[in-house]
Each structure stands twice: as structure tokens, then as C-alpha cells.
Amino acid sequence: MSGNAKIRSVPVLPTAMPRPILATVHTSAFRNNLDVARRAAPDARVWAVVKANAYGHGIERVFEGLRGADGFALLDLDEAQRVRDLGWRGPILLLEGVFEQRDLEVCSRLDLWHAVHCDAQIDMLAAHKTNVPQRVFLKMNSGMNRLGFTPGRYRSAWARLNALPQVDEISLMTHFSDADGPRGVAAQMAVFAAATRDLPGERTLSNSAATLRHTVDPDQAAAHPEALVVSDWVRPGIAIYGSAPDYPEHSAAHWGLQPTMTLAAKIIAMQAIDTGACVGYGSQFVAEQPTRVGVVACGYADGYPRICPTGTPVLVDGVRTRTLGRVSMDMLAVDLTPVPEAGPGSEVTLWGRAANGAWLSIDEVAASAQTVGYELMCALAPRVPVVVAA
Ligand SMILES: *Cc1c(COP(=O)(O)O)cnc(C)c1O
Image 1 (cartoon, rainbow, N blue to C red):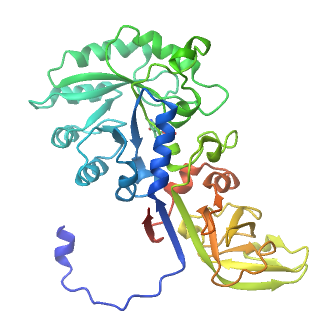
Image 2: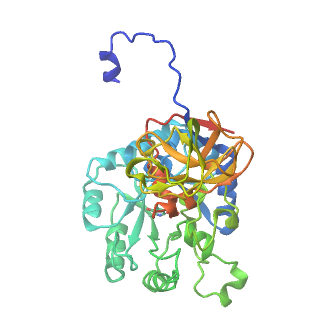
Image 3: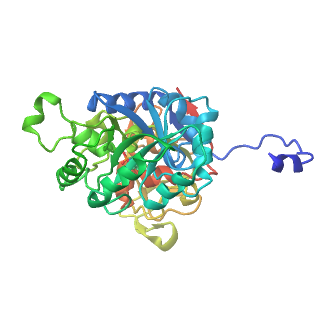
């Protein structure tokens, strides 16, 4: 605001030719993925988790596709303000609660629900001057050992909150460390269930992995004592962004999820190299046969991981091929062998959807970078232009 006032005149430049790289946010994929979460937990309400600027997509860009959610869960007060600015009047949950006393004033002003995971947050509430009591989500550390009260201290925290005039409804919350893996959720579920047995209030337990993998029909509950049948709210994040929470055990396609982000660029140069010739810094790729190499306008400064080795999957004109050699700051190289027609100007899909309808899951690229889809989405660089598609 005051920053703009200082800029007296902005020279009008002719529109520069954009560099041929573009990210696309797919609104219809959000609707599809939200439906997948709803079908997995039909009795629960759904928090769409939009922390980290909607996992790198941009809160304003994902809002249309997610307005069918029952609430938005995030971390930052600034992000909460942005969701309210979009006209959202429903629930917003601060997943880590407040960080300092004055944050509670913002909670009152924006009508935010907030997690309470430590005594200091209860102290702040006790000191908060308000006529409108606030809804809180009391967090239990049921074994992940990140945030929350231990089971032994949970009830006294509940009692303390319950005695405060500043507090309205108290909901109960925990978070799973292993919902995506072989350890599962049974042990943490048992801890949570035992410590909350006779406490009133709504429950929220499940992230994407727990929602997709550990929710069953109430009729089948007896056969699945580990299943999460008592969950009033689920908290899917990554699934909503079209990435499988348990890749590679299951793919996004297995869960019926669609990619919400496409990162695409174009080939800007081509090299025809002989056997024995190398590609890129450090000569990490050595051709074993004459090879046509496409040079792509995407590098690690765009958020494409530098660690991706030769062989990372990529689509050229919607045809699957591989990267060659090291990723550089602004470019990377691809093997054009499976796409003999391709050349400068051809479409390269780093992840997401190609124009011909083919998909490359961000999870495959993430695996090649020894990480998860979450990190790649969040790391999309600000220099990449982004458009929103239907
Ligand atoms: C990030 C987060 C989620 C969403 O997790 P996903 O694995 O992306 O589904 C849910 N709950 C809490 C407390 C979180 O911090």
C-alpha cells in the first residue's frame, strides 16, 4: 500500500517476449480431488489445507476450485486474511494456532478457529480481551512428537480451556506420523481414543493419507478396528493437489486424483550429438549412440530440482522421454529419440498435463529427486508465470 505510493511513475514498456515457460493451475482438478476426499470420508466435513500458499499454487488461484470445501486450514494470518478477502465467510483453521498475543486480535477480527498445542497459547487466550469467545482445536501429541499436549496432560489442558470465558467450543485434534506407510495409524488412534474417550467435541484426525487409506464404512468398522470411523473433519492437503500421499505404493491415478499443477516449457534449441559426446555441466551424460538432444527453457531457478539425474521422466509433445545430464539454472536437456518430429518450439511437460492429454505425475519427478510432490509444488519459483485454467 504505502510501497505503491512511493512509485511516482512507472514507465510503460512494450510487452517483452515471455520466456517459454508456464505453470497452469487446473480448477477442475481441484473439484475432482475434493470429491475424491469426500467420497473417502463421506460422513466428515473437509478442511482444504491451503498452507504454504496453497502448496505453492497460490491461494487466489485455487480458491475457485476449492470453494466447495467446508473450511480452509492454513498457518499464516496473512493467508487467512487473503482467504477472507476472497469472500470466504466459512470456517478457517490455524493449524498451528497463534504465535503471539496480538494474533488473537486477528483471530477475533477475522473469526478464525485455531489450534492450541501448548500452555503458552492457553496463557495468551486467558489474557485475551474479547466479548466473542473463540473456537479452538486442542491438539494432542499422540506419538508424532511434533506439536501437542501429551495424552497425560491433555485433560488438564482441556479443563483449563473449558474454564476460560474466551473459549467457546473445544474440538479435539491430532496428527499422524505414519498414515502413508506400514506403521499406519492404529497405535496413535488407540492413544487418542483412550485419552479423549469421554471428552465432548468434534474430532479432526486425518491428513490425506489417513483419509484415503484408513477410513472405512461404519458398517465395516468391526472388521477394521484400526479404521478412522470417528472423524468429524478430515484435513486433506496433498491429495487435493493431485499427488498420491503414499506414492510409490499407490499412484495418483490409483486414487482417482488429477494433477492440479502443470509445469510446461518449450524446446529452445536442439543438438544432434555423436556417440561419445557429452551433455551439460560435468559431462554427466555420455551418448551411447547418435542422439538428438532438446534444450528446454526450464532449470533449477524455475523450481525444477537440480538433483534430478539423467533418466528423469518428462513429456515432449505429450510423449514420454527422459532428461539428459545435469539440470542447469535456466535450462535442461531431454532425449528426443522417442519423438523424432520434435524440435525447437515443441511442448515439454515437466509435470502435469500435456496438450495431447497425457499426464506425468509430479510424484514421479519427485521420486527421481529423492523427495515428495509436496516439495516440488511448494518450490515453484516466483519467476515462472502462472495461469489458471478451467
Ligand atoms: C499439512 C497438514 C495437513 C495436510 O497434510 P497432507 O499430507 O498434505 O494431506 C493436515 N493436518 C495438519 C496438521 C497439517 O499440518
